[in-house]
Length: 157
Image (cartoon, rainbow, N blue to C red; front, side, top):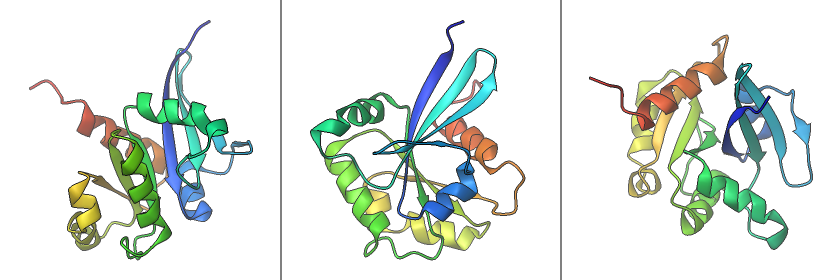
């Protein structure tokens, strides 16, 4: 049976934070970690977890995935200074190459931190959306996906 698959790239400068959202049951490859999220028997989401933005020819297939994805995720430390961090560098490199929308996943419930991120020039200039994820939540990934898809696919009024 052929499945319907959506492929979503995930960036993170901090593997432990990415694991908090996506878990640690993934397959390891030289350029990325791979996770399949089963929605049902006919649909899945493939996540490609990356520590940096692809730049070399042998990562060309990742470029294609990013360009075809509905969006990308970037898992962000809630206390990180974006401008002067590895996360900021990932953002700059990403938006130099791609136009695919990006969501920051921030593991916090603190609305003030969300406002701080939204006011960052790098975030505002690139129209990055912020998703707060409850670090104590039981299914963080499901709630993050629901919020991201609700933001990119307008609901019928």
